[in-house]
Amino acid sequence: SQTIHQWPATLVQPVGSPLSLECTVEGTSNPNLYWYRQAAGRGLQLLFYSVGIGQISSEVPQNLSASRPQDRQFILSSKKLLLSDSGFYLCAWSPTRTGELFFGEGSRLTVL
Amino acid sequence: GNSVTQMEGPVTLSEEAFLTINCTYTATGYPSLFWYVQYPGEGLQLLLKATKADDKGSNKGFEATYRKETTSFHLEKGSVQVSDSAVYFCALKTSYDKVIFGPGTSLSVIP
Image (tube, rainbow over all chains, first blue to last red; front, side):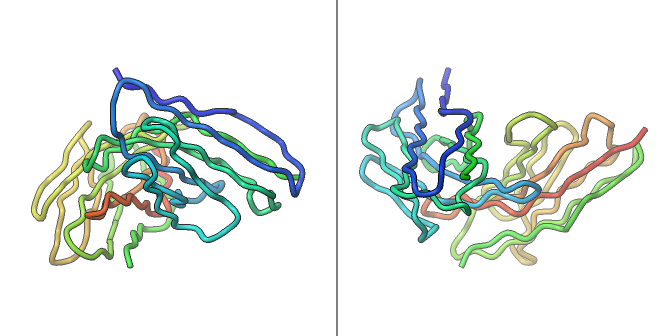
């Protein structure tokens, strides 16, 4: 069966520090991969998605970036965090073209 | 552009009441439509889906029909239970596999 792992689960970072959130999927190949941010009491904001290695679509022109160095690995990064980057980040995967998303457990980021 | 709009919550119903959560969308091409549910303390999970016009998705007593003419995908259930208390998200997938979500609707069912 397929599983998705996302880490770290919680982190507290100072303003201006770098960020790296990692997500890996097991048990499938060539998945679509997604990064979302969920604000408290609000919906999911799509940040990045990828339909293949090296193919990243960005939805949010801020100081975040994403990379897909391997087929089942998706990384969310920032060189310098802002206070506004605080939030709950969710990674998700789907079988190609279905749109049926399976979510990781999320990473709660607090920027101080 | 692509977008999903949902009725604002929170919605509070008595047990066995009829539920409707409205969802409308804007999209180019022919999107697939989804309802996801997030139970308290849990992650999002797929509730139901429809991939083309006039399709009806159903699961756990919930139903939604893909209406292209009104660009809608309203979620309905004939008799809600306390265990249905959750946040419900409408979502669409574009032809380029981008998946976007509505803001979510919180439902509380009281005995």
